[in-house]
Image (tube, rainbow, N blue to C red; front, side):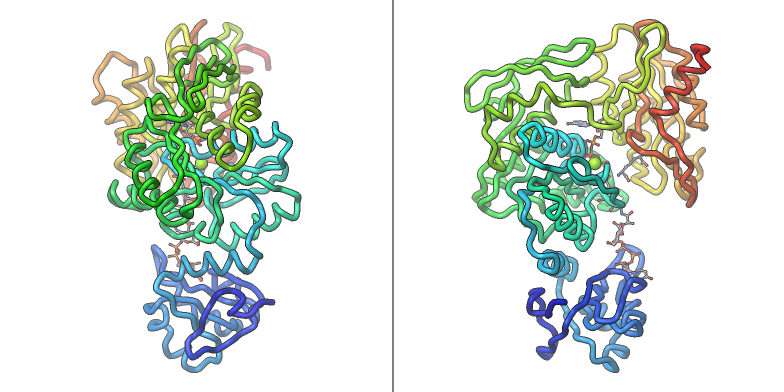
Length: 495
Ligand SMILES: CC(=O)N[C@H]1[C@@H](OP(=O)(O)OP(=O)(O)OC[C@H]2O[C@@H](n3ccc(=O)[nH]c3=O)[C@H](O)[C@@H]2O)O[C@H](CO)[C@@H](O)[C@@H]1O[C@H](C)C(=O)N[C@@H](C)C(=O)N[C@H](CCC(=O)O)C(=O)O
Ligand SMILES: Nc1ncnc2c1ncn2[C@@H]1O[C@H](COP(=O)(O)OP(=O)(O)OP(=O)(O)O)[C@@H](O)[C@H]1O
Ligand SMILES: N[C@H](CCC[C@H](N)C(=O)O)C(=O)O
Ligand SMILES: [Mg+2]
């Protein structure tokens, strides 16, 4: 139990209350709880204050609109009322205090693509340095302690519960993803960061943010608001937005570590050579040359690894020790993961590319590792940014020799309509590629693998680590890696 004052909250009329728990969902309210009635995308949480009061909530945190919606019920209740201009931000700070300000060294990463990869590499580096760490994001909590998560960036109550449980499990280092939704909704405002990273910026989530400016601004909240002035910003200077992000951080007085091929990068990539199983890197740290092996496919993984290395250094590790660990890094689940190999040697990769830029990057990254043709299987998610669909089709057609358009979580939408938007982009991209449409994802995978000759490779894009296909409200079990092995076994006559 904690008082409002202990949670940093001031109620109208100076009322006090002893709080027994926090929630944003009226259905979870128990006697003595603080109910945060937040402005939502579909409905204002103020509509549910009446139910929260009925369940004996001791305090209500909301904005002026919420207080107005429930004015009658609030007037007839003795629950404490906290009216905040930005109740999501207030809730984030209160959640941090409820669970006791977290003890771990935390770094966070934002960017359109690469967050899961960078945070996973941070955790792998810490493990190699014998520091108990986890990464927290799209793939859940992974590392010294494992735990599933519903969101890439969990809402603050869950986030601080997870950070507190991680600490109880002896975790001292956490690398977390800062999604643009999470930043916009202030989900990580109460987290104390040692360092924050920026990977890149391209199109995604315009269904939510509406404009590129709003999307970029949401991401910049990580540096403008969450990371304090004495935190370190680690910025990929090779991204067209990188220098602008660095300028924002410098203006706030934060130390900036630039990463990339860019001449101003403190951790600078100077050479990269690819082979069948990975790549060798030449890089400089503060002007001193170094070399490492990376057993990872895809040139972009070097960008992610260097961003992770710089974040771990920024959070206090010794640079030379960090660079010594890079040779031991392993594939991130569902990111350029070798899922199966045909008897001819043709390889099948599963990758989470679900934006136009990621599809282009992933396919371009495969080229130096592949002798023959590249086949790609691609689809776009339902109830998500519609503008990215034709761009994803075009990126696939421009960078692969054969394109198969299929379904990827149609959700509430008509799958055929989503496919035809992707197809239109692919067909309009020009070129001589073969482009076809196979709605059933398992059949698309089987056909894609059947096309492979010696030296060819297939990229199954979009679902990565996911284990389900969401059709309507139903999640059907589906795993690209598993389907790839089943298809190879069937085609080779192993079963
Ligand atoms: C668009 C979005 O981000 N929505 C999030 C937001 O919901 P909302 O505020 O819009 O919800 P709403 O339905 O309008 O309801 C308003 C309020 O009333 C409350 N309510 C509602 C019903 C009820 O009976 N009682 C009640 O109290 C709700 O808890 C909510 O606080 O706040 C909720 C509680 O924190 C989140 O669960 C919800 O995430 C939804 C489920 C979601 O799908 N989010 C995705 C898009 C998302 O956040 N994705 C990002 C990253 C993706 C990426 O990186 O690619 C992520 O970080 O996961
Ligand atoms: N540095 C990068 N630059 C461009 N594309 C990348 C980069 N890193 C990863 N990708 C592509 O983006 C895909 C998703 O990578 P990852 O899961 O690390 O990104 P994310 O930012 O966590 O995505 P999400 O928004 O879904 O959480 C990868 O499978 C790959 O195709
Ligand atoms: N976190 C992303 C993942 C997209 C993955 C893809 N499989 C899809 O369903 O669109 C989103 O929810 O937009
Ligand atoms: Mg992610």
